[in-house]
Length: 222
Image (cartoon, rainbow, N blue to C red):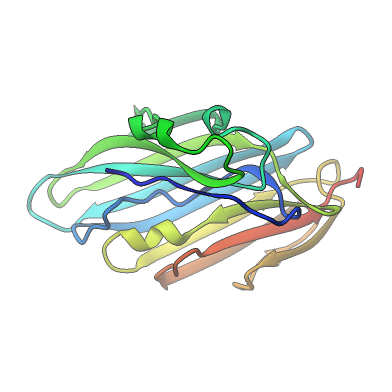
């Protein structure tokens, strides 16, 4: 059974209602490799749209059914667990519509928790020796950290797939109406950024436990 994670959080800083992360499987698999992840975040005055594309390769000679997990993470949020969701969520599997839903055990979570992971799941079959493409889109609001705003993405889920991730591309798009000043991007993976966007490419890596990145900025009205 898919476990759910929730805990109380004492800090009053770094509050965020919802942010996403790399699609993963639990338990981890040695049969399917995540060959690439490409995620684009478009920051607007009314929120952040996220577009993610994944390519997978079944390394075996048999079909492999797996349960994909698309995570929602929340930190110091006032939004109750049952009502928290990835807005305008949609997905395709090899260009066919794919629905992500809350698992039944999601109802067991502590409704008073302020920091938690909420999973959305979908069942797929990886055909023998085949390559598959998953596309996911949704919207979130940026997090708050004092006067800063931030957009986060947890990459740790990439470690649940076989071997190392061959390539990951992460990009931010914005303009002066949404981002006044970029404070920085953590961790330092060699990010490049300017007045209209930021970008980094990673190759042949294995994400560490809890790994994530955060794009910090001042909005025009800070």
